Amino acid sequence: MSPTAVSPPHDAEMRNSHRLPLATVYYREIPMRPLTSSAEPADLAERYAYPADPPPGGMWLRANMVAGLDGAAQRDERSGGLGNAADRRLFLLLRGLADAVVVGAGTVRAEGYGPVRPVPEWDGVRDGRPPVPPLVIVSRSLGLDFDGPVFTEAPVPTIVLTCADADPDRLRTARAHADVIIAGERALDFGVAFRALAARGHRRLLCEGGPAVLGQIAAAGLLDELCLTLSPMLLGGDALRILDGPSVPDPARWRLADALTDEDYLFLRYTRATR
Image (cartoon, rainbow, N blue to C red):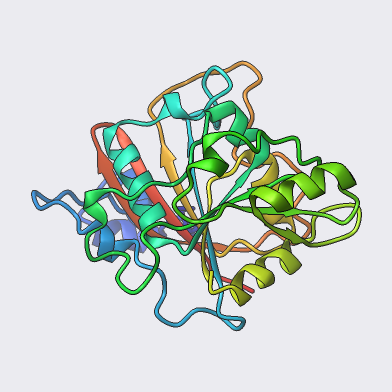
């Protein structure tokens, strides 16, 4: 949270402050607050529930990412080594709350993705919906293993987002193994793609990256919420940040909606304050 600038106190204020040091008077007026701690664990399903009244269009897109203290979003080219047990449990909860899970093809390959599978902890979370959300893979080239478990073992059909310029042979193969949505000509139009998902009933979306996909979504102004796990690690090197794409032309203001802690990890949730 950025501190608000205040003017230094005048001499009269100093006299009224029982001659406290100038630094004490000045800095205590900056509205920064400590995180409060509670012995009671947070009700994560309640705190991370999707808004009851989504914005116009009826969709809400949240992203779930993890980064080190220096902003690195990968450790050994994967994000999995940055989290702890609480982060992994939150990862599963956010999947259970979502109608569909959006992820880039590069992340599917790098992280060894399989299909989304139900977990006992989802009891009550998915009432009235299919047992699992479908995985929605973003791929322009369609360089995917369509004989892999992410397609052949999925409890609900995997969805593939691509563009009209995709290779025709691969497109035919994709359609034989997945529900394919074409959005855009030479590049994927995420706005069109997400509206097509909403038309299928997938209005509460979760994006798990990777940084290239999330960078394009953010640049298009489509991100509503960011769940960011801040890992107590310094990695250096040339690791990617959580966004790896074009500059955001009109950076939105974001509001801190929640902050939780476990061990030395911070679990932050920001929502877009302007539209």
